[in-house]
Image 1: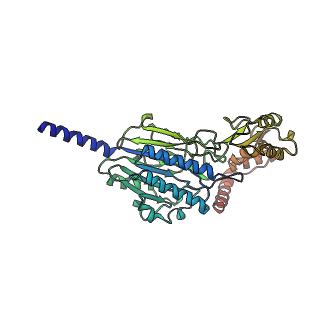
Image 2: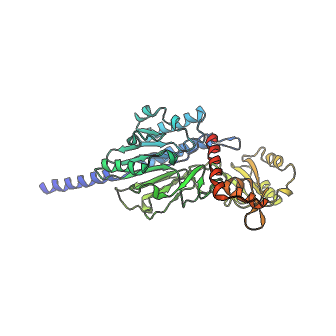
Image 3: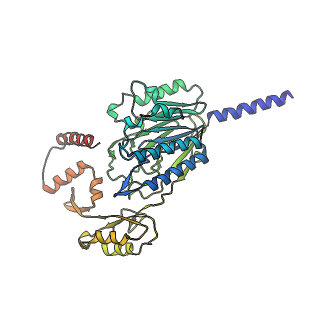
Length: 419
């Protein structure tokens, strides 16, 4: 009898210990609610995405539902869009009553507005983190009892962060983490070495108005670094398989021609080595996908007008898709090409958006020739590179070391005004 009691006690302790240390996370980001595509409202698509999110959470029953920034597409979303978000958070809370929900603001969000109802949300175990609070660093640390810790960092310009802010936050966690529980760090930023496909203004220094930083700038005492901002789901490999962009659950641009999903990661304990076995990816299906012709799988492919027009003309009338046409010879397009493309979509299920034509020619610096760039390619080119190409094309000369800091200063001022 005594041996049976002892065995039961040991079994109970082991089970309780495993339950205590294991933490399951559903990681998502970059919802961009309220996004309008070339004038077309996307509410139905966004609602379908949110409904799938609730179903996935209900099936997975995670301990933590984490949104790493860019809840909205603009900082002042319409009331109907905010209502859609609020309704989803409540549905998530009902679907998983024991789940902690953490939502941080991204560079598209208003940090101040993000926190307006912060106190009542916490009554539902929902934490809205909008602005970095250097006076109360602990407000960025959410403890999930017997499960783990979340360091929730909203988008913040590096110049506004105190020195060693990442280390200070993880120092606090280390002091409080007496049970050796998993630690999750959430950040909305651009990490060097990532694949920025789909971002039309991406360079190796800045993506979507956010400066690119090295992952080493974030103190590595976390078990999982949950990243937001980059829309393509991917790991940023550091040798530990624990740094990941979950990606956007729905395409925002035509160049995001890759599957969109949410990430579920199961962390067995603090300092555990994560492998593929710890991850599950749930694809989010968009009822109205974004398609580029002539090649839906490779949006960098352009075709002649007559070929693309023929392909577009044969497109299935019941296809529920947004369509973009990539044209390489705009000089051969008829003057009414756009009107013709719009008329082609009349009475069809699909929606025509625009013609992406290679129509801008810029000097190819150092080659002595010229190269064609589409408007989107021009927008995606680093502004300083455009300056250098223009200088080469016009045989202008200037001191780069003196001119660049002044140029960057003006660019930052314009960006601040735009924001």
